[in-house]
Length: 182
Image 1: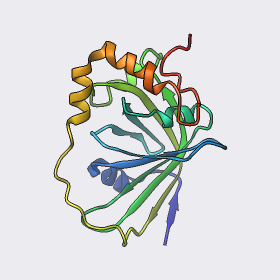
Image 2 (image 1 turned 60 degrees about the horizontal axis):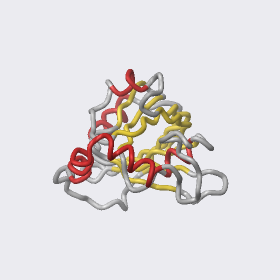
Image 3 (image 1 turned 90 degrees about the vertical axis):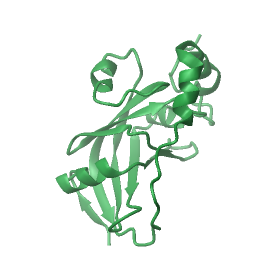
């Protein structure tokens, strides 16, 4: 049975802080729904109704494109060990790019990662837990370092070129604003 709350309790904050992976879902009114797994110690709970997470360079940039047109975002965590639990945070997000006024302040709250391209600042208006009894047990072995290694090897200038070539538009042709359009 699902239970809903208006804020993230201390117990749920503790649960969030232990999770090595979370999932982010976004969509505009007429775009494809994007659902992405995230990890790399990239999320911080700022208070009981606000989280931020650092997005690093990847093959697509759907979340940024969606949030700039429709701020709705759902973040989901699930327990793969111990007691079963699914936690969903529903809210509205803002995209903060490097160079934006808030970037430096928020970036200091996060673990620096190579290829960092956006911070999502999410105001949470609904918290929901559900049983998670069908979620299997899985063992966390460790983070994959491949993306960090790729971004470090590429370097800042080539990352920016990658943004230009691969991250400017969503798969539905929506602008991400990761780079200035000419």
